[in-house]
Structures are given as C-alpha cells and as structure tokens.
Image 1 (cartoon, rainbow, N blue to C red):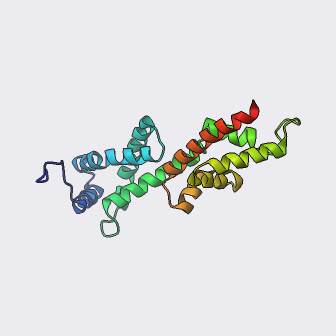
Image 2: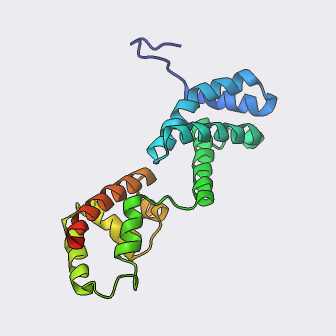
Image 3: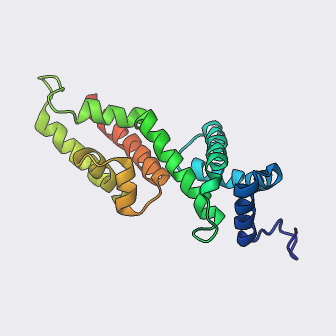
Length: 194
C-alpha cells in the first residue's frame, strides 16, 4: 500500500507480526515471501553496517531466513514483534558466524599487533624505549575515540564485540574506527623504520 505522500510502501508492524504468526502456524509460502521482501533488504543493511561485505551480507540474509523458516513455530506474537524476533535471530547468526570464522584482523591491525607491540619479537638492535615513545606519541595523535579503541583492543586485550558492548557502539563502528586508527599508526610508525 502507498502512503499519501507517495514515498513508498507503509507497512504496519503489527500486520507483519500477524503475518509471521500466521506463517508459523501454516507454513504459507506467500506469508514467508512477504516477510522476506520486507525484512530481506533491512537485514542486508544490518549485516553491511556491521562490517560485512555485500556478497557475504546477501548470503547471511539467506541463512537468516532459513533459520526463520525452521524456528517459526517458536514465534509468539504476544512476546515480541516480528522485527524484534527476526533481528534477534540475525544478530545471533552474525555472532555465531564471527565465532566460526574467528576474528577478522586487518592488514594494518596485524602489522601493529605482531610487528610493533608483540613482546620479545623485535630485533635486538631496535631501541625499545624509543619505539615505545613513538608508539605512545602516535597514539596520542589519534582522535580520542580511536585511541581508546586501540588501547582497549591491544593493551587490555578486549574483543571487538566486548568493546562494542562496553562503549555501546555498533560492532561495525568499532571495526571501522580501529581500521582507521591502524592505518594512521602504520603511517606514523613507518617513520621509525626508515
């Protein structure tokens, strides 16, 4: 249905909850298609905002709807809206997938972690106090929100998910800020290597 301003479809959330409830009882493919058509693009955006590339996000949407199909009998319209229930499944699926694939580590993050701050791995001729001073100075030159994430991630060894939870940030924001921070640190620390 169109809204009066012609901006596109207006969907009543209660109606979608009823559609999901109906599907959970009847396995009606038309109801499932309606849910997929509405939530599919939203789930794709959800996954992409979490740092997932487009192709993987599309794959994860498919996997999420397989889970919705399998778990539909568990849905209770009196306990949660369809959107809450479906996005909870999506969030849990994303967490499970991250756990399976371990933790994404960017090239800059790997460089910082393994070559610059790993204890005991530096060559004997590296001036450790000077290196430490340069790292501290480089961290101080980062925007405060990026420096805080680097300190939590590498000095306190807090996972990306825990940082997101602790700072009440989306996981994708934590990852993108860390990528920016590591890119800046790599450039700054490259001066030391020359």
